[in-house]
Image (cartoon, rainbow, N blue to C red; front, side):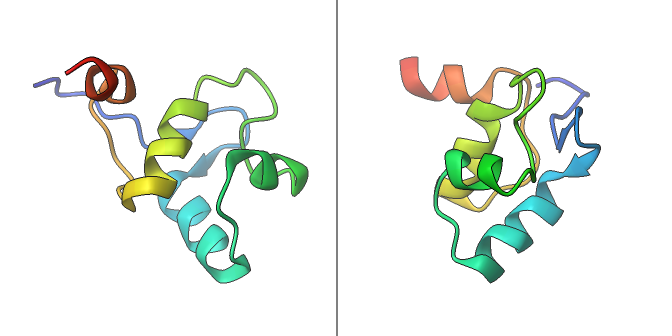
Length: 73
């Protein structure tokens, strides 16, 4: 297990925890809805798979590569 964790949108400097709380409060269920609100994932897009996993599971901190490892394993 990596000692590093993926836990924020780098471009927006916003933690996944803050993003999750916003999504729950606003009833947002997709990355595209969050992008429309300019909350996350509108810059480099590296967080998109993690945001998708966060919306699905409620988790806010991930091992690097977690979305890809989950899909293949």
